[in-house]
Image (cartoon, rainbow, N blue to C red; front, side, top):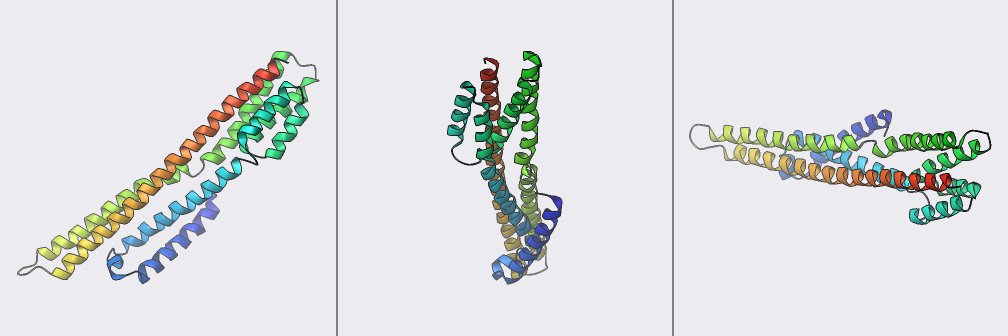
Length: 235
């Protein structure tokens, strides 16, 4: 997600969070203004998650990936490189883009008189460069999710601390403690803690899920690239 998109989304999240806080039930409003920041991070977590789901879905391309890999291997083994390149363009996923770049490089240099070793080195380099272009797109905003998880936890603890300060201040009054302020401080502590931990848990789970998906993609690219290179080298 680009910065020029992230800024208005953050502002919109702040506005929506403030509106929700103003119109929330009393027991939630007692979380105080800090609850607005907590809700903002919660909505940003959902926004990043939706954006990552869309990116990973597009990266998968069209059709079943396993069937695509099988088709590519069969085409390369049969010497039908044009069919393999066409299949990559039709599939349109990140894996197809990487393999397609390597096959196009091989096809372009195969009849140019370069040595066999140089041909394979250039094909391998083309695969690596294409993978280097695809990976950052899949890894984008994952650090943001990890950061939100950490900040949300600390924000919840900050709300807890502020609420406890208010509660102890109410208890320190001479005579009978101010029951209203005491309850308000406890409510503020609990509401902010609950929201902070909820956001942190969701962000952590999503970060681990997306990281696993990216790792699986990289492993599949490396495995498929190696197998395609072996098939090309055996021709």
